[in-house]
Amino acid sequence: MTDVTRRLFMHAASVAAAAVSSGASAGTRVAGPVRVIASGNGASATQKAWELLQEGLDPVDAVVGGVALVEDDPLDNSVGYGGLPNERGVVELDAAVMHGPTHRAGGVASLQGIRHPAQVALKVLQRTDHVLLVGAGALEFARAHGFQEENLLTEHSRKIWLRWKETMSERDDWLPDPADAESPVADFFRRNSVLVEDTGRLRFRRPTGTIHCAALGAGGSMSCTTTTSGLAFKIPGRVGDSPIIGAGLYVDNEVGSCGSTGRGEANLQNLSSFAAVELMRSGASPEEAGMEVLRRIAKTTEQRLRRADGKPDFDISFYVMSKDGRYAGTSMYKGSKFAVTDERGTRLEDCQGLY
Ligand code: GLY
Image (cartoon, rainbow, N blue to C red):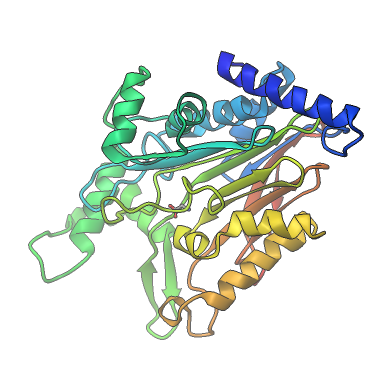
């Protein structure tokens, strides 16, 4: 536990103790399930965060420590090192953290050259009176705190970006490599393509992968983080939902937490993570809350983003946990998984699909 997190934790503990002595419900819970949940790419993160909780770390340090494994992973093209770049070939990262006991939050957006944006977001929470730093200011802040700059674009991600650029139009001067048809890069494009029924052709769908991770610690403290390289080949400066409190993540320590992966614009338009927690406050279960925000997104999706059958032409998922340890993963379309670690071990479970 860092010094500042320990101070925050002790402050929260004293608030909880005061609530106990005054007979209020806040803080009366002294034991309960310890659980970590994450998006489907986060099994290593939930396992690591669980181990850090067992060592006595605060949940906010546990989730940030857990997702660092995925931020480090060059094979995960949606997060940190090896993330897919913006349209100019530059990796730009977004991340946020939220600490339930103090209700404090920190985030960074459009951060370049730092592989652990969730750690920088935690520093924003701990060492500033702000919630969100962006672009050059976020990088300057990270440098001031000793974070090392590096090139986050791996050769694999560079080749994926170059092929995207070369195949985007037949009316520009960039020509794809004709020998590339069977390469790992071509395979990446096949795996991220959908069949367009009218034409029978494959259409590439730009990935919006991300990792969200939430922890419920002993005594009922909750925290969460979301970290991402955002929409692949985005316009430079595009900020998604991940660093925006209430959109890509939210926690209320008296209610529960929610975080998301998938099309960030839909969460920015619906403030989905805040909405899910508020639905739980009104009595919804984690699954009901996650399904209701999906219905709201499906209802408000504009026509150009709908398939021929009227359903949204994108996927989006929610990872929802209540303060008593109930949890759910929900997705626009069936087939997604989410990761869980608790006393039963680490596993992937099915997200409930709206469609
Ligand atoms: N949900 C990740 C993004 O849209 O940036």
